[in-house]
Length: 475
Image (cartoon, helix red, strand yellow):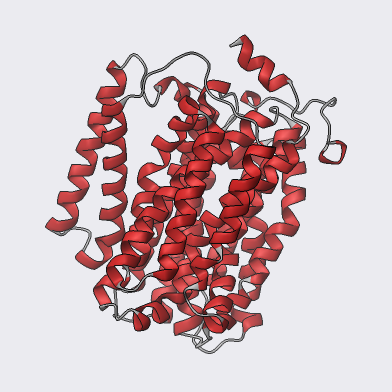
């Protein structure tokens, strides 16, 4: 551990440039969660998708993304965070190219699944690079402020960018745009990002890797398709049961392994546990919020794809504007009070959206809620990210990063699935009452997130910012 401590204490003069590279790659993966939604009608028409198969363009990505996050994070610890990150960039970039070139629905679905694997490799390895590059305290908080702003605003930007690209260039460009970004990230990474890995030789826990990856992937699949088959149907319950069995097997295997994929002692840090619970609920609210709003704006208010995307600029822009203050206040006053403020704003936004109508204007129906969410996103994503890495050892940076990203992704899948079921419970199309009911569900989830943050997170477990740490401007 002395070598690890020495590595952390030696400040990388290129650390802020390295942050730019890994954040750019991470932003690609966030965009691809929402950017496809706007383009689905065009994709379906162009490639002659059947109605049932079209949703697989989204589901295939979600399954592999959610399933491989935890494994990828631990692989980054064991085999080198920069190396694993670059592998993820290559996989994601090539898969994006094949998505844009897809000539059939089968090719596009398969390419989206591979793209999800690439995203799952990029995300935790990138976050673990941030953690091991910046010392815990003010510097890391500033870096995570940028990370949180991208995570919080990425979904909103994806809706906007998807509308613009689909309208003016064609749906293929929602995938082609990743290629130059990925190529540049691959070129710059070995020049700007230092390699790091866990100290000591550890073997890969193959049995644990298989059970957790298959279990998480099946869980995301079952939850994603539950609205189509029914939550109490034999189809859904059987797949959820198998997923639970696989995850229980994973826990049993890990308890007996000498070098487990996921050492459970990480959960002894109560703040890390609290951050993952809050992150799970945060993912549910955020993903579902954009999902329901996109359908409402297009199908009820009748906005075009590009006009829908433009409305979300308010949320994305607000999130970026508030990010600096959110990071500074979190560093000054701690994670718990800022999370409480963020979740209260999220509750207020969801309550506001329960009052939507079929004929309101942008200013009356959307703007106040968009502004509230734009404020809430950095005041939740940034503190959660800081808490998820608090007190975690250098050797387990990838593990902690994989955990929080898995929690948010699983939460997002559950949130979208539950709200989809509520949204279409009374009719096969989007209705005002369905939208209202879906947002009441999000009010409940947001309240649960607030309670989890207040009860589980302990600010005393988070290292206070050192007055001697330098600012980005001094780098």
